[in-house]
Structures are given as C-alpha cells and as structure tokens.
Amino acid sequence: MTVIATQSLTMRYPRVTALDRLTVDITPGVTGLVGANGAGKSTLIKILLGLSPATEGTASVLGMDVSRDGGAIRERVGYMPEHDCLPPDVSATEFVVHMARMSGLPPTAARERTADTLRHVGLYEERYRAMGGYSTGMKQRVKLAQALVHDPRLVLLDEPTNGLDPVGRDDMLDLIRRVYTDFGISVLVTSHLLGELERTCDHVVVIDGGKLLRASTTADFTQDAALLAVEVTDTDTHPDGTAALRTALTSAGLTLQAPTEAGAPGSGHLLLVDVGAAGGADAGADAVHDTVRDAVADLGLGLIRMEHRRHHISEVFQDDTPAPQLELAGTRPQEGGSDDVA
Ligand SMILES: Nc1ncnc2c1ncn2[C@@H]1O[C@H](COP(=O)(O)OP(=O)(O)O)[C@@H](O)[C@H]1O
Ligand SMILES: [Mg+2]
Image (cartoon, rainbow, N blue to C red; front, side):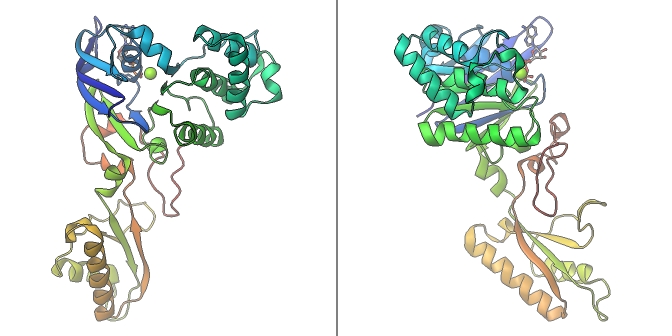
C-alpha cells in the first residue's frame, strides 16, 4: 500500500527545473523528505495537493490522481505550509474552527475537533488570544493543528521545525511522531536538516536539485554502516597500541575505516571496525567482537572502549558528491552520542 506515488514527475519553471523525473513510492508511516533549500520539496508538496500542475509525469495521493482529483485529495489530506500564514488578529480557536468548517465539518463537530486538536498540540489558555502575539513555536503548533483538524488520512508538513530553537524543535518532532503513533495519520515531513529527521521518521527520501538521491527506511540508512568503535591503551611493548591493533585486525581479515579526521573526538586513537564486512547480521557482529577481543589480549593491550556505532544519516553521504549541498553542519555525531543540530 502506498500513500504517495510519483512517476517521472517533472516541474520546470522558466529558469529552473524544480523536479527532475522524480519517481518514488511512499508507504504509510512517517516519511522525511530531505533536501537543501531549493531542492524541490515545496514544489513537490504543491503538486501532491493538486495546487500546481506538473510539467510532465504523474503522481497519486491515497490512490487519487493529482491532476484530476485535487479537491478530493485536499479533503483527505492536511497541509501545513512553510510560511507564516496566520491572520494576526484572530485567535487560534477562531482560526482552526474556520479551517474545520472550510473542510466540511458541521459547526459543533468543528468546535469539538478544534478543542481536541489544539489540546493535542499543547495550546491551552493562549488559544483565545490573537495569534499576532504568538511565539514562533505557538504559530507552528496552530499551523499543525489546522492541518489535523478535519481528521485527514495523511498530512504534508512543510518545514514544521523552521525558526524553532532546539527545544522547540524536539517538541515539534515528538508531536509529529505522535500524529502517526496516536492517530494513525501518515506524515510526509520536509526538512533541510538531514540529522533531525533521523529519529522521527520510518522512511527518508533525499532529493537534490529535483532529483531523487535516495529513498529507504531510516534503519537501512544507518544499518548500512554498522561500526564497532575500539580504543586501546599503549604499552611498553607497543608504544602505539592503536597502530599495533590496526595491523593485527587487518591481518585477521577485518575491514577498518580510515582514521577519523584530525580534531574529531578520539582522533587517531579510535579504530572503527566494519561489522557488516564480516558477513552481516548478528553472527557477523559476534565474530568481529571475538576477533577484536582476542587481538587485544594477544597484544597485551588494555581495552578502553568497545562499542557499537550506527552511522548517522548525515555520514552516509559524506563520500557522495551531492553531500556538501545538504546542510550537514552540526549533525555529525559527537563522542557522547549527542547529535543536536545547531
Ligand atoms: N513559482 C515559482 N516560479 C519559479 N521558480 C520557482 C517557483 N517555485 C519554486 N521555484 C524554484 O524551484 C526550485 C525549487 O524550489 P522549492 O520547491 O521551493 O524548494 P525547497 O522547498 O526544497 O526549498 C528553486 O530553485 C526555486 O527557486
Ligand atoms: Mg520549501
């Protein structure tokens, strides 16, 4: 079952090709659509809503054709636009009731759903105040609420964490996750920050210059590069314990990553052993553990650390040429496991 399917979808503006033969299937759950500014994310969303016709190719949403069934799609899909779109002089309650009525809910149902939805996004007394005085976080919550109020089957959220501080961003990502886990509403959420969607999304679709770069489950992204980080002491016999262990592990048939870049935590002292290379799955990981343990014991080194490291999504692209165009700054993992985005 797919909620969104595109085939060779292309959108050409006079000066730029915003989408370039994009073919992708999106299944139920939370899917992240990631790409740098200008990658074509908002363009795709507007086509999916039936608001702007594609130049070439086809797309369907919940089984409906975007070029024919825009009205029916918008009845069943919620949309959170990227830009500020809230009238400043009405309250959140008035605005969301209005949006619910526009979606066809009768007056009583519209008021009830509005109260429920605003509670879900965490707006309480403030919901009766004019929205002009709201913080960015509160505005983003109202925008999310109006996308949910008519109980859609799918929501398209365009950069919902834009303008939020790290705490506000985490709160918004938790809310988005719960849209699916609590209500079963599928989510397509865009971001120009690769790192932040990693723990929120089941699937990630990466586009660049309107082209599909990669689409897979979040687990696949990170599993591809399961690594074992090993750190050892030096001894009198082996004044450079790390180098000695590197030689021993290589001759035992293990694959090691190139030394970490200078300046990174543990730089020069951390060996990254490729776990997948030993045959994959858990048996492979166990064999790698045993080989490392035996090699450390044979050399008489002290073992400071031996821990699993999943690659973060951002690292998966470090070897690819398109990577520099994505905003990866601040998404590199640190030694303590913190991956806060700046
Ligand atoms: N209405 C438009 N007219 C002309 N060019 C547009 C229009 N909308 C978007 N673009 C261009 O299409 C490209 C993709 O834009 P957009 O979909 O907004 O990217 P994103 O949402 O990923 O930042 C950009 O180069 C942008 O300048
Ligand atoms: Mg955009």
